[in-house]
Amino acid sequence: GAAERVWRNDWRRVVPAGLGQLEARLTVTVVIPARDCQFELGLTLAALAEQTYPSELVDVIVVDDASSPPLSLPVIRPRRSRLLRLGEYGAHGSGRARAEGAKAAEGDVLLFLDADMIAEREHVEAHLRWHHVLADAVVLGSKEFVDVSGLDAAGIGTAVRDGSLGELLAGRERSDHGWLDRLIERTHGLVEAGDELFTAVVGATLSVPRGIYHESGGFSSFDRRGIVDTEFGYRAVTAGAIVVPDPEARSVHQGLRSFVTQGEGIKRLRAGLAANYLPTRIFRPPVRGRSWAVPRVAALVPADGLSYEQLAVTVDAIVAGDLDDVAVTVHGRLDEQCVELLCAYYSHDRRVSISPGQGVDTGFPSPYTAIVPAGTVLGTTALTALVRRLDDSRLGLVTTETAAGEVQVWRTAALHRARRDAPAEGDDTVAAVARLF
View: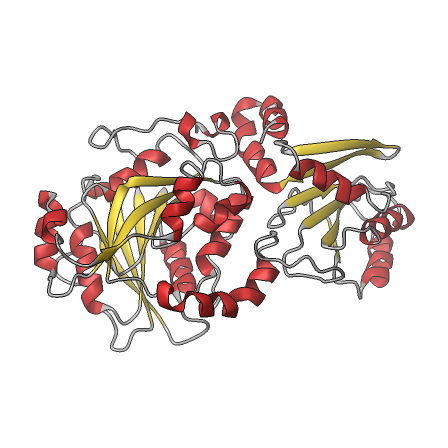
């Protein structure tokens, strides 16, 4: 891929094919989460049946999230469409439905599209052109919210095929995506979005390579509105993805927005979950002494056959530091007695875990990964200072020498992106990403 050419989120360095000029080779599975929306689904599939992207490279999975009555595939639909029915179990919602659809998907790229979206004829092509030139892209389509009452699937299909959807919808009440459009504009296409980059990830029209999707852990099944997309976006960005908003991947949302009227209530209900799973200043309050589902810093201590005493002194120094939003994993070659002693000593500290025999090479999904050699006794403020240096710089990695070896603190995103690029380029790529991320 061309990912090694991109620093941070500067996708402008990569030029994709113009619409109508793509030599398509990647397959794409369109995953549509759907619940009790037979009519809307009909319009969505009618538009998908008329795309410019080669139909032999496209398949569609409609995930029926326990609709009553069950959904069926309409007559007007893409040639390779199938229905996946989920039973009445577990959490409902787009997260579970998307996750189940992704498990069944076989395309090189996964394109998530909500069941109330009408994709213009070049929508899929606009998404896919980025994946042909950028290995790490999460592409966001653009959308308008339009009243579509009184329209039918045949009319929508014809308008998409003829490129006359705009004329068909002319004069109807419409709105843009408000905050998201403003964020994209203010940050020059998310290039300068910094820490708020992941908040732009909205699942209504989103595509991602299958490999990056699985590396980031996919969609979670939270049963709260307003967090599933954001939390997936956070993990994708922490896995080093590049977020590309493409205004030419145009689509229409059927009907006007509900978040406008319910936004504050939704934000309040999701706040507790968000604080636990999104370790950023935007969502996590700066309180001391708390443990969270996803710690801000994940410290890895490679055991390498060292003694219980050497390991314990290192772990104790980390958890005793003034950075308390941290978890420690001791991993690698450990003899049985050492494991027994460590487990007994740390059995009631949930911030410490022991992984004998396993090489752990990332602190994902924590945004920072610290690699601390056993035998190192970090000072009380050492980790805080190293993380602050990363925060204040454009670096992906900072290091400091100790008597026991080199302590590394990575941005987890830089670590993942460097590792994906390194096999083709050698260790220079790791060094380059580390220097400037």
